[in-house]
Length: 310
Ligand code: ARG
Picture 1 (cartoon, rainbow, N blue to C red):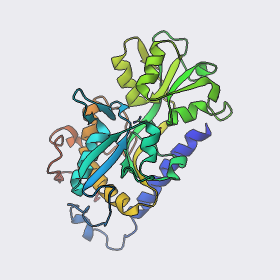
Picture 2: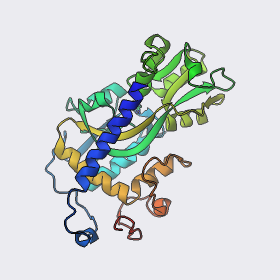
Picture 3: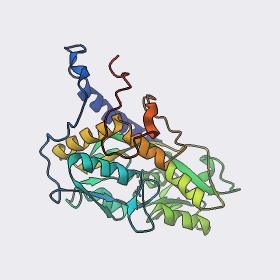
Picture 4: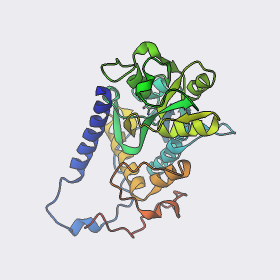
């Protein structure tokens, strides 16, 4: 289970750093708190791969975070959040679909500005990417055929496990048994979660391990499949930029923070995950989530919630 812990710790460390950065100045008690954060995102001098464009790499076979609609457009939670960020930064959004490994590598190799693909923050990735703050949470879930003899994580020992190549689900499962995994020889890596699910339908694997929202989505569209109640690992999703690209990271973080604060991010998540039960952070969800925020045009703070001031 070491890997699980390191993921959690990486998330905690990242959060800690951000928290520290946010509360450095406490000299003047309440005076400066009153100013509303309008658009503070125009300051940093960042450059993008293509001028005027925010290029996002992703793997669009990961519903509801990213998928293609009937007309071939990439839609989903990540696509909408990225569009809102691009708008705040005055950039046009361009989304490039590729395999997941490629999407992760693209910022570092100068092919994209950001990777946004339901990417879990972990130590390995932090070597080549800098991550924004968290915008969503997920857990790894196990998909099994209805009536499967796999009813718990322990039952997965010795079974064939389907995963998506390059994902944390693959990393956990393919680890040694001593480390909480199931051994590489028992894990099959597919190009994406949809292919893994097809393999499960065809009886080529006994279960599939994939992020919860995606698992729920795939179960809903594949009759005869279900998920185990157990939550396999807890993860934080963030946006990755090339390691050291601080100007872009800061600009995106500022835009993202505004979108979190005004409820836009939550309303996008709620739109795609209607029964979202994950209440991982703070619990301070403003109730205005699904009223007017769906269209992110004006993004005016609904100065109803004074909770932060105390
Ligand atoms: N959260 C998992 C990870 O970071 C899976 C992400 C897969 N994303 C995708 N768009 N296919 O490894």
